[in-house]
Each structure stands twice: as structure tokens, then as C-alpha cells.
Length: 358
Image 1 (cartoon, rainbow, N blue to C red):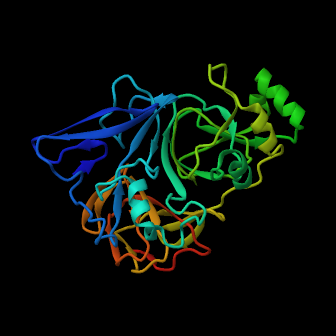
Image 2: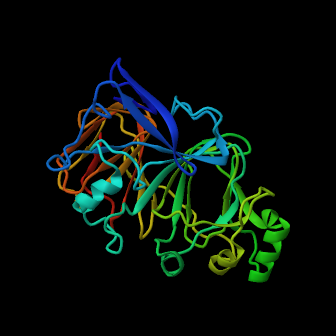
Image 3: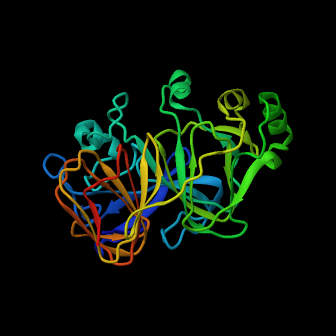
């Protein structure tokens, strides 16, 4: 089985973390005996009505951490991991193939949640972020701009604050409206940092950042990020770090005024709160006293990210730091996890009526 990032299938199993490509770090398994990647292996041809575990990809960032406990106990030495990805095409799955391979063979997994222009791609990218320094001041394009210049989805995103250590702050939008010329000038001088609307955050806060929102994430934060599945980022200012800036694109797509998209939780039931709802995703926080039941036959996929606790999902063990994909048209699902905490995300016009907290 896998618990966090430590692989212990049996006594003969070993595991190590290595570079896969570029700055991507992945778990690569070396078995003296061929065993399942986790305690259950899904048959791609027949068993796609049960949850799939999505294994993490670790990405190094200059602002990341060398210690990601309690979520991940095994880390590559001397590497600062800032992002952990779960729904990228290269993520391994409990179907013993990557998510990209799985969706190419069985696109019906996504159901109504699929993007018709990119049917073999999970439309949502789920990440955990771990910061020790401020991230760059940046902005993301909308779908139209990203399609025109990058043949990609745009990037609207939302953050759920899992933990916040001092100073515990994020920047979203500007304190006052500025001009494109002022944006470019202050990005080059560094003054842009003082024009942003920096806000204190605490665990449990949700922040919605539509495409075009100039933003930055501060130090000392652990964040669960839900976004369109795009890695298009225009860096406007980077505190003197020797990384490329993207002012031409960035100025064109930036909204130049205050951020007016405050997320206010809506209680759907005891232990179930809706945090964000937009055209790309709904985000809910689930805190069951005992169980979560999801009725069979949901016409779209769901993603479940465990932030706290342990238990079983469809009879299989789960732990904090794991992400599970529930395929569309699944069988009845029971998640047994008293006191656990989850983020659930999916695309739908209304909250899922078949989700029950007990």
C-alpha cells in the first residue's frame, strides 16, 4: 500500500524518489517482486466504477520546503518541494497506468465533467502548495487568450488555506485601480509589491482568483489549490530572483483594479460547506462525523483530497495527503473516516444532491 509518499508493499519492496524530467520529481517503484503499486489495482477494462487513487508528482520550487510532514514523510534530499500535483497527465494511478493514458483509453471516466475541446485531459489540476518564501507576483490568462497564444486552457483557480504560519498572507488584486503603463513600470521597479492588496489568511479560508487577477502567495502557507488544468503563468515581478518575466503577455491579461471575488462559505448540510462555485468548478469542504455517502450514478467525475484523518474509501485505506478520483457513473460510494477533512471538487451547475454526510 501507499501511505503518504512512503511505499511499503511488502518486505521486499523498495522505493526511491528521482528526477523524471526537468524539475518534476516522481516516485519510481523498484520491486524485487512485481506487486501492486497500492493495495488495490484497478482493471482498466472492467473496474472503472470505483475510486482511483492518484499518486503524487513532486515539483521543486525556489520557495518550497524540504519537509512536507505530516502529508509526506519521504522526501528527496536537499530539494525544496513547493508543489505536489495529482491530476496531471503524468500522474500514476491505481489502474497501473498514468492518468493521461487512462483517460485516452477510457474518456468516459470524466462524464459530463469533460472539456469537449480537450477530451483526454482532466479539466481540473489539483495541487498542494508548501511555501517558505513569497511566490512571484503573477497573473494567468483566460481561456480565449490561452487558446490563441498557447493552445491551452486558461487558468482560473481557487485556494483553500490548510495551514498558515506568520506572516500568513496572500495578495489578490490592487488596492487602487492603476493603468497598464503603471503596471509595467512598477513591475520593473519592484514597487508593484506595495500596490497589491495583501490580506491575512488563516486555516479554513478560501480565496477565489479568476483568470486575470494579479496575485501572489506569501510565505509559511500550506494551500490546496484547485485550478483549470493549465500551467500558463505570466510572472510580473520576482523579488530579484534570476527567473524570466513575462510583462508583454502579463500586462495584456491583467485586471488592474481591486479584487471583488470574496468567497463566503455556504453551509449545505452539517459537515458540508460550499467554498467556491464558478463555471469551472465547485469546491466543498467535507468534515464527516462518521461517513460520507455518495449515491451511485453521478454523471460527472469528482476529486476528493484528504487533508486530515484516515479511514477507508470504498473499502480501501486512505490517509492525509492523498487524492482520489471518483469516476462518473460509479457505484454507491461509502467513505468511512470519522473526524477526517476533505476537499471535494467537481464541475456541475448545482451542488451534488447525492452526497450525504453522516
